[in-house]
Length: 144
Image 1 (spheres, one colour):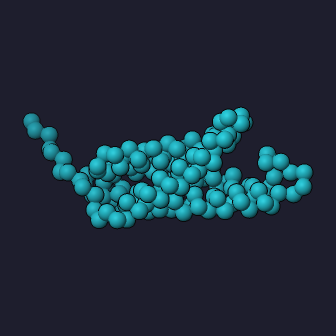
Image 2: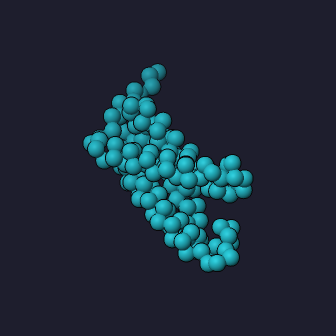
Image 3: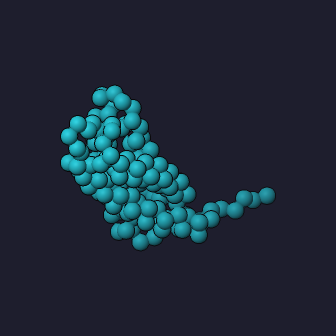
């Protein structure tokens, strides 16, 4: 089991780093999409935002699920770091829903959540690369 947890830790380190880079790329995509809109386009029908939409769904769905699964398998210590990875995964899964809900009071949290995703994923990627090896306590064999 220790080998599985170590492997999950290594994957979590890479996935978190790629997720962080993906969030940065999303800011470029939305900037390109907004400034590339043609006259008369709205945010709903602007084809220039397709890269932001499509990559965002992949990043949030695949990245969010991978981060959650890997964090639960690696079970990093201290526990506050595990909680932060779980929060990152949940925030990632919520991100497209904030954009698609259609109500301005919900949608306004889409960019706020993006900033949280950027900061938290950057912090966790830095933490993961700074740390050498996860602290994996030995699992006691069941007796009897």
